[in-house]
Amino acid sequence: MAKARRGPRLQFAALPWRRAGTGVEVLLITSRETRRWVIPKGWGKKGEPGAFAAAREALEETGVAGVVLEAVLGHYRYQKQLKSGRVQRVRVAVYALEVVYEHEDWPEKALREKLWTTVAKAATLVDEPELQALLAAFAP
Image 1 (tube, rainbow, N blue to C red):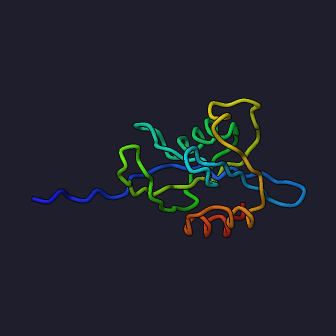
Image 2: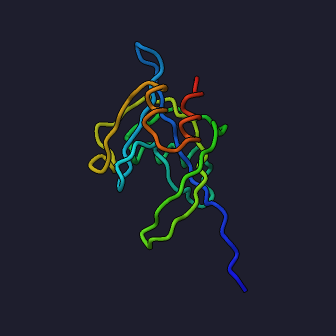
Image 3: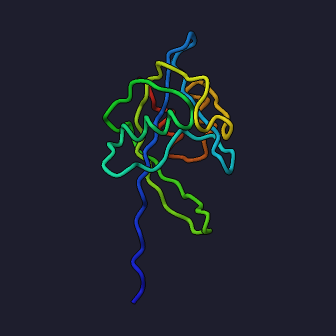
């Protein structure tokens, strides 16, 4: 009997944003392995609400904290290359996070670069088409 194909796993992401003199800016970070521009995301912990997981990932990966909305902003999909070499399909639930504080130090500071940029520019920097569309449509 053939093995059943696993569906996509669920991750949680924050879309950190702030108001700047020129309008709304969003925060992108580089991924650890490929150095692509992404938003902070990761796996939830058992029993952890999605919005809380997204805010925790943002704090760990970018050092930002703020007000996260409980409603999902949108979803996007991508393929994650696992250490085993297997490819895992992932669906990401994205939550808007209005940044009110940026820490000077955070757990993954040495592993990533950060970039505050306009929503329009951010949409051109990420690779995933669904994330591009989500960013392009973002208006807090």
